[in-house]
Image 1: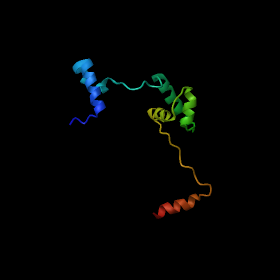
Image 2: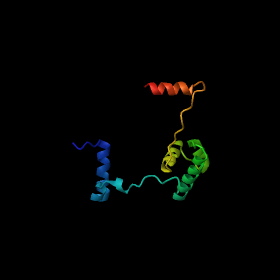
Image 3: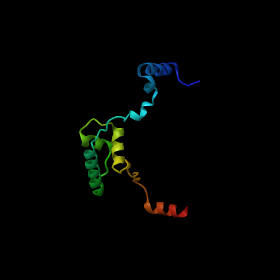
Image 4: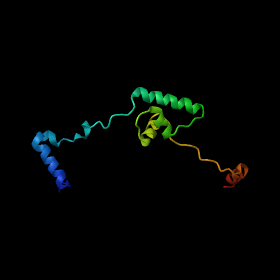
Length: 111
């Protein structure tokens, strides 16, 4: 009826017996999540560095970001830092060595 599992219902009852009605509250609002890896100053410094390098034609990768901070940072978090700074972790597709640009342009104009 309540869609709780047996163990879940026991946890709720245990919280109710120890905390009363406050134990039945939704505790997710009080959970602020994991602390941030970078401080606000580090985030701003990193964003400025990304912009400078981008203007010079340097494209950062996740591995470069990991080496930049000198902290233990998971690779997936490095892409999160790049997105927060306004960059996406994308590179242009490589060009085929034997590709003919004029033939490609002709093909595009036909379709």
